[in-house]
Image 1 (cartoon, helix red, strand yellow):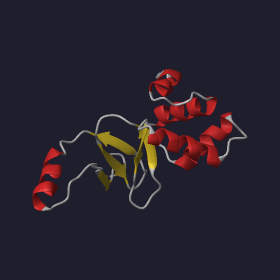
Image 2 (image 1 turned 135 degrees about the vertical axis):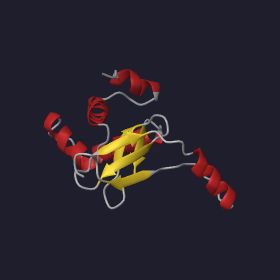
Image 3 (image 1 turned 90 degrees about the vertical axis):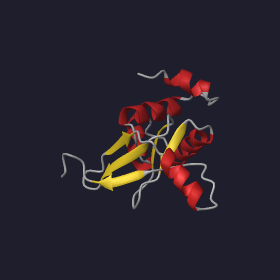
Image 4 (image 1 turned 30 degrees about the vertical axis):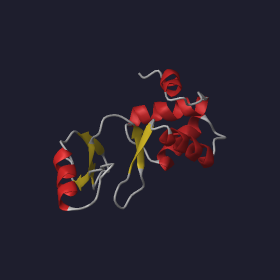
Length: 133
């Protein structure tokens, strides 16, 4: 298990029980939306507010500790920031998997076919996982 306190300190984020719980929950789930995070944390911190969770998530996003994964026709989910990767999302069970792809060719093609200079890349594939096919 990740030493949440140490990792938060490395990103210059204040260590609080709520932040530790947020990081632990994200580590446990891999990807989680705000509503699911709120419901999980309510069990540990009955008085926690949705505003507190949003405030903490935004602080972690600002420090690049967390990344937001925008999912078509669904709420964004959050994950710990790590190397660039893409996502596979099952349209039936909503399972999210990470996949490593060489996206350099996509960036190169965009650059060569337009005057656009990409700075970030987010690739999300939707379809059906092995279990739901």
